[in-house]
Amino acid sequence: AYGRFKEVVFSGVNEIVSNLNESTENILIFPTSVQVQVIDAIAKLSSNRLGKRITLVGLNEWNGYENIEFDHLNNLNFTYAAPTKPDFTSPASKSFQRKFRDEFKGEPTNYAFQGFDATLFFVDALTRFEKPTLSCLEKMAVSCGINSCYNFVRTGKDNGLENRYVNILQLNDFVAKKLN
Image (cartoon, rainbow, N blue to C red):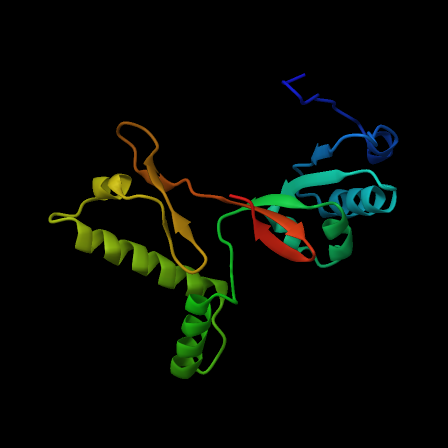
């Protein structure tokens, strides 16, 4: 047990369902990308929850599975980490979409948003420092664009930098809402 949490390891979904607690939140971490296992577990957990509070922590890639039932994910408060959080309704996003359509006669993809955000971040870094180098990136505060955020951290003394920012999202009323 870790404080208020109790770690329990189960060998199957049926065993999990039979051990769900009705009086507390049941947080289930299911870190697999095997699509058949994910779909089976989600269906069983969703249909057998019977008033039990469940938060299912899984992987971002589940959102791309074709046969997954999003109502099941919604029922289970699906929570996951993702590198980006598209918000197509924000004023900045709507402006970007409008300008993109005018210029390229099509809809912007996630790559278009990420390219815009990365360019904005690095141009901002170039303008902030007299002699910009990679080490300047470590000095910048967390910076967010339309759907990507950046927080560069050195991975080791003689290593490069990596973006350590991650969005924690939870499916609620069929909308992925940012928790962090």
